[in-house]
Image (tube, rainbow, N blue to C red; front, side, top):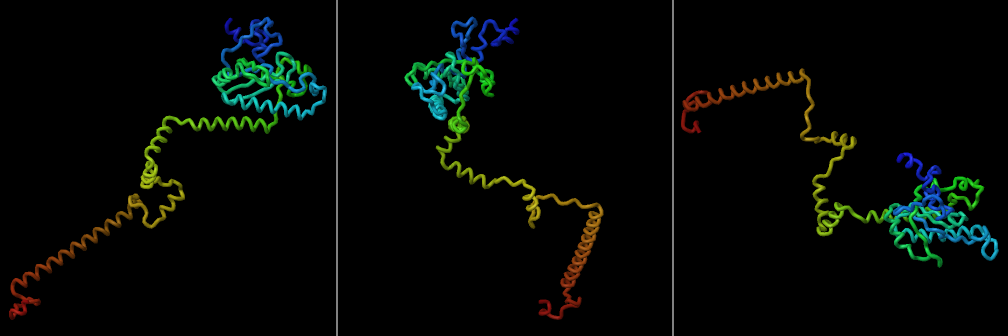
Length: 311
């Protein structure tokens, strides 16, 4: 039973809750509606009831003095209102959307729906707008259950085929120029990005404080980094380094074949034998010379004839 009630909540099959109030945040029956209008206690969307007063309110395209109005003047009047309201609401948080109804029925005429990024932003706006006036009229602001404007908007109106006109029970939203939308929402997002960039995380805050207290840390750190600068790992750098005459000192030697190793071993053995034979011959020559000198002989092995010959 509970699952069935949850599945039909806010639809035409729901005999308890008003589907129009759930989708649009307004109902043409008002408080006389036979179904419940459950107002949310918190929501990211606000409804500012009957706030926009179009200059051709009495008759479309005609001012109160019964003079025909230029459509460009009507659009300019609306965009001035839209920009003024956007700037005021942006003080309380980041706006996701701002929609103004073009309907003529009493429960929807001039309704303004503003959707904030966070529910806290919407609550802040409610606190600051309650009891204020705009153009000499009190501002009526409250939380709205509308979260998906695609379900609340009249699709036939967007296709210029709605036969109910301004008295349609779905939203007919007035449009602003692309330039104004880009200007307002782009500025709001940039302002929000700057505010987020100013809020540092604890790690970044400590780094900033350390730099402020020790102004030479960065310079010393750069000096240390020069001593252990990371090596480039690009293939071109490695190829260029391998072609250098000096090369790396600890580079592993190229492993030779077995035939080359045997030839080198034989060559080392021959050189060692030759060196040993030369050492033996040199030692024999030295011993022979010492013996002849101790026996008083000369270079030819004969005795020295006098004292001068010895020296």
